Structures are given as C-alpha cells and as structure tokens.
Amino acid sequence: MNKKMELKKYILIISTVLISNLSFSQKANFIKFNLTNEFIKNKSFIKGFGMSFERQITVHSGIESGIWYRPYKVHGSIRSGDLFYDYTVNEKHFSVPVLYKYYSSIIDFSVGPTVDFYGVWTINKNSSDLKVISDEEKKNVGVGFLAKISKTVNVSDKFYLEPEIHFNSMLLIKRNFVGFGFSLKYKL
View 1 (tube, rainbow, N blue to C red):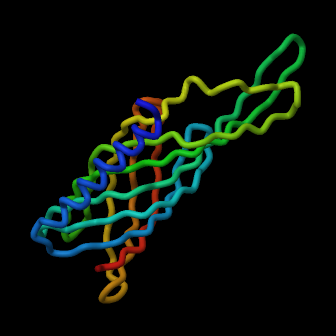
View 2: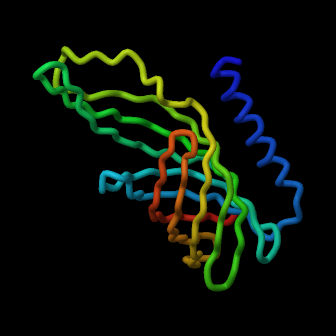
View 3: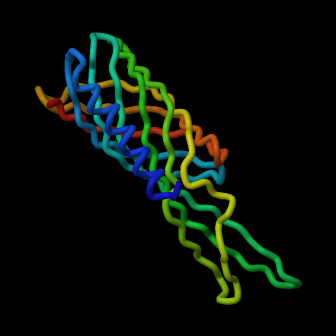
C-alpha cells in the first residue's frame, strides 16, 4: 500500500472514531486550541500547536482527539578526511492522539495512544559539498503514547483555559517529549 493510501486509511479511522462519539449521551463538547512547549534532549525547548475536540461523556469520563504539530531539530557533524561538516535537520511531525480523559474537581488526567506522522524535513549545512540522499532511518507513520495532567479554569460561560503538563513517547523513532502547554477551550 502506498503512503497516500495509508494516510487516507488513518484519517478515515480517526474520523470514524470522532463521528461515532457523537452518538454518546453527552455532558459537554469543546473545541480546543493548544500551544505547547516541550523539553528535548539537547536542553532546549520546542514550540508546537494543535487543535482538538473534547467530549465529556459523564461527570468523570471523556474523550479527546485532534491533531498537533511539533517541529524537531537534529544537529550533527560528519567527518570526511580532515574536514568536518556541520548540519541541522529540521523535522516536522504531526500527532493524532486518542485520549481517555478523567475529570475530577482537583485535576484532570488524560492518557492514550497517538498516531504519529513524520512530515517533511529540510537540512541546513555549512558546505555545498555535503549532499543528503535520503533520511532512511525515519518511519513515515508510527505509534506513541501520551499522558497528561491538566486543570480547567473557567474564564466565562463558553471559554476556559487549561494549563497542562504532558509526557509523549514516539515509540518507533525512540523520542520522548516532556512539556507544558495551554489550551483555550470553547464550549459548543
């Protein structure tokens, strides 16, 4: 199966899950706009963003899904004889989480799998002699795991702020992200 067909299959599955959730008895539905800041292994932060849909099914249970964008930079150096070539690979990832959310009066917990899409990449190099043929180590689609703790703060009848702390593991490419973020939630 080619990459476009795989992508269409994943989008169809995720859409089916989201649409089928509309048949549940509901307490509340939210659209969320997320901004994240994640700590990575080279001791820097990366900024990401996303949009998600949250359905609170009961007083204590809900489902959350959406799409999040995350950039990532890999720095390296290649030696050829006595010369060193420095480079930076700029990667773009998209994650689609499907999370169970537990609501409490003190704090909320979310946990679940993610489908991670490795998007495009570009390379910055210090020499025109350095040529990149491919990035064979990267998988186009992978799975991951996301866990987060958040607290919803009421701003008005329809708007809420939700600060969060999260841990996301992208299993196939063996990367872990720890970060914090803020969501602006709109009650539908």
